[in-house]
Image (cartoon, rainbow, N blue to C red; front, side, top):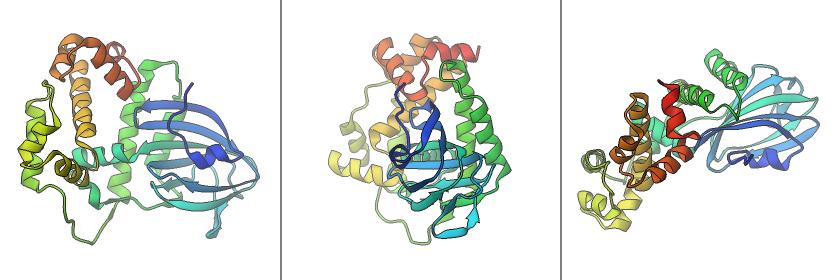
Length: 285
């Protein structure tokens, strides 16, 4: 099985990956064990929420030596975070990974958070019953061969990230500059949603913003934290998921989401949700 979203420092350490599952395109879960090691955490575009399952009592962060781990202790490493860790006796932990793209989209669409003001701090050996329960549920339900089970995991991962945002997000004091104006941003998103069943071109979106394609792409990414293509794809997959849950015929769902062929739609859907449209729909029938 290909393990797409994993911590590079963990792969380069003595740690052994015991289990792994892609929950969806931008989200994964891994179970690790390690002992007698030194690990420097750093993942440029990957956020990591960690829960100790066993051991960890003599594991510590070198700049916080008096703070020791243990079962049910939580750590969070935002993308671009670096810290140096000493691992002692054998431990087992679960890592929940999600990309910056996924975080930005959820924050923007669920909580109306401008990605430029979105900041999550690193957490070391925190206690949070809701995060612990969610991660324990994901751990108990890891089954890479059970496609329908993955749909339940997708609901749980979203709740975990939204809880992180609601409870731990720090507000940046500096003023937000650049990017699309609220009026232009709203006009472009309205155009996407009104024409989501069409083959939307970058030139059309740039035209709605009265900008060149190059300038528009840069300003859109600055405002949304995603490229126009990534945002449109997320919007299409969100619509597809809603319609499949409502038992709309699969062929019609693909058409409503702007896909010219059923195979193209099926490939895009499976890449995003790691299951076929048919399996996804049956799980909600």
